[in-house]
Length: 351
Ligand SMILES: Nc1ncnc2c1ncn2[C@@H]1O[C@H](COP(=O)(O)OP(=O)(O)OP(=O)(O)O)[C@@H](O)[C@H]1O
Picture 1 (cartoon, rainbow, N blue to C red):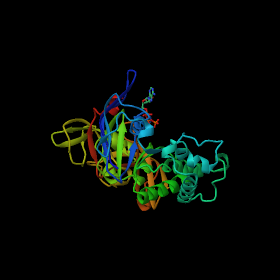
Picture 2 (picture 1 turned 90 degrees about the vertical axis):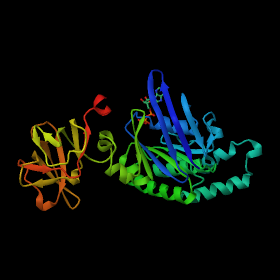
Picture 3 (picture 1 turned 180 degrees about the vertical axis):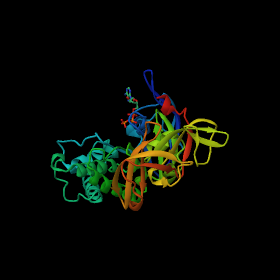
Picture 4 (picture 1 turned 135 degrees about the vertical axis):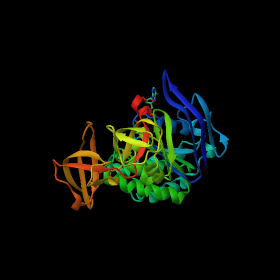
C-alpha cells in the first residue's frame, strides 16, 4: 500500500505543529520519521492513523482519499511506546482483541481467531506464552505482543511510534533487526517514529528528517548522512564539528585567515561542518584550523581526540589513527575533510 500526504497543516491553538507537510511512502517501503522532541513526528503519524485530523491537506492510501476516515475505518496497525497492553487480559486475548471487537458479521469464528492468534504468537516468537499476563513478560516481549496485536487485523500499513523507546540498548537493537525482517517478509508499508538517528539510519529505506513542524530532508540513510541538505540535518544526523567562517571572493576565511577548503556556497557568514572521522592533523598550520588538545581516548581501532578550536570557544572532536594521537595540551593544525558550508541564517540559529 502507498500512502500520500499532501500539504498537511495542523495547529494546536496558536501553535503550528505541522506546517504544509507533503510526503509519500511507496508500497513496501520502511520510512523513519526522525527529529528532535516536539518536531511534529507523532502528530504526523497520528494524522496517518486517523487518530488526529489535519486543519488542511489530504491523506490518501493507494490513491484513495482517506482524510476524513476515522481510525477504525483505515485498517492500519499501530504500536505506540505507551500504548500499553490490557493488563487484565492474557497475551492471547490481547492479540485477539482487534478481531473480537469486530461487528458480528465481520468477526471470524472462534476457532479461526484462535488459529490466527497462534500464528501471530509464532511469528513474534512467543509461541508458548499465550496464557501469560503482560506483567509476567519482559519489556521486549511485551512490545512483541503489542506488535502481534497490531498485525492481527492484517493491516497493509504499520505505524510505529518509538515502539522500543523504553527498552535497553541491546534488546532494542535485536528487536529492530527482527522488525525489519518481519516488515520485509509480510510485504508491509511501515512508518516508524524515532528521535534516535542510529535507529533511523539502520532500519529505514528512507529517512524523513523533521524540525519545527516541517520536513528538512527525505532521502536514503546514506544520502542523509553524506549529503545533508541543511545545517540542521548535518548536526542532527551523525556527529559533527562546526566552525564559524566567512565565505568571500572564492575563499573560506577563519578569523580572517584563508582555510584550505573549497568555497562552495554563497558569500557571507557561514558555518563550516565536518565529521570527526573526516579530519586530518596536518604539519603546516597554513590553511588549517588551530586547536588545543584536551583529551585522547580509545575509539574503535583508533583514537578520539577532543579539545577546543583556538580563537573561538567551541569544542572539536576528531578520530585519527592511534599512531597519530597527539599529546593532551598540544596545539595541532586541523584540516577538515569533506567539509560542508551552510549560510549562518538557518532556522536553527533563529530558534
Ligand atoms: N493535543 C495537543 N495539544 C496541544 N499541543 C500539542 C498537542 N499534541 C501535540 N502538541 C504539540 O505539538 C508539537 C509537536 O508534537 P509531537 O508530539 O508531534 O512531536 P514529536 O516530534 O513527536 O515529539 P516527541 O519526540 O517528544 O514525541 C509539540 O510542541 C507538542 O507540544
